Image (tube, rainbow, N blue to C red; front, side, top):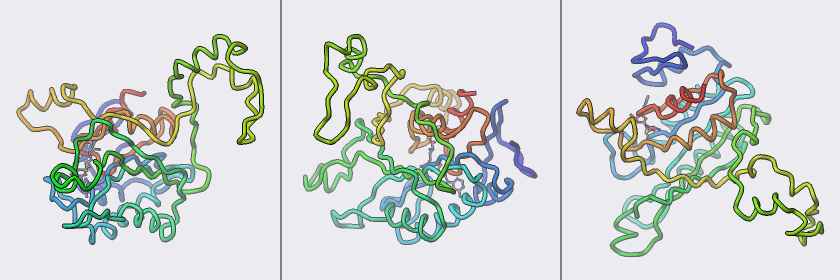
Amino acid sequence: MNIENATPSYFTAHGAAYVGDSLDLLAKLPDNSVNLVMTSPPFALQRQKEYGNLDQHDYIGWFLDFARLVHRKLRDDGSFVIDFGGAYMKGVPVRSLYNFRLLIKLVDELGFFLAEDFYWFNPSKLPSPIEWVNKRKLRAKDSVNTVWWLSKTEWPKADVSKVLAPYSDRMKKLLEDPDKYYTPKMRPSGHDIGSAFAKDNGGSIPSNLLQIPNTESNGQYLAGCKAVGVSGHPARFPAKLPEFFIRMLTDPEDLVVDIFAGSNTTGQVQGYRI
Ligand SMILES: C[S@@+](CC[C@H](N)C(=O)[O-])C[C@H]1O[C@@H](n2cnc3c(N)ncnc32)[C@H](O)[C@@H]1O
């Protein structure tokens, strides 16, 4: 879908990228038209990054303006997925609650539903913050982001069978010869482990802990930046993160929007998918 009275900075057969303030751009889209807003806003960090993140105190009000507009633009079965990095309070080894406070406001004040809370574990994350983790050794390294999957109604479009995880080696063996591995019985939890568990569904149901390393160092995007002599975006998310939610929550021709697109990883994923 093209945005009226706005010129895309580039486009493909599958979508368009616009440069501008997403508050203005999003306002131009028709209400109830967007299937998924998948995004990673500038985080409320203490250290100012070059892409303009705000102080934690102003952050919540600033973000809610975008979220109100997202609510209006989403279809009734649409979803809003937001990746928030954690933060520490200024000068002390104590965590900020900004991502949790925001979640509560998004639900209580704006009317979103929390469809599910996800956690993105990046095993390749460097230890930080340096003062508390590396120097004084007071805290463990922070390598999990909260990812809130919000919806406009209680029944967003979703199909977890589109994002099945590969079976473990143990499960593969079990599927080859179920009788050898277990006899149907009731577990202490009350779950009846019967023959249905030995059915090959093409993969296992993923958990809400997404383990995705963020290690791209020689991909197409960075090669392109190098070729034109610009530095790459400092805070990209790995393509597998938006890919998971785009697959689970939309159909190929649906409208997916990233309101803080940065290098447009989300657009790239949606483009390749179609
Ligand atoms: C954490 S980065 C997102 C990076 C992105 N996920 C990627 O993979 O490249 C946040 C981005 O939001 C952009 N941003 C901040 N305020 C914005 C606004 N009002 N409208 C549009 N983009 C904004 C910043 O310039 C930055 O590129």
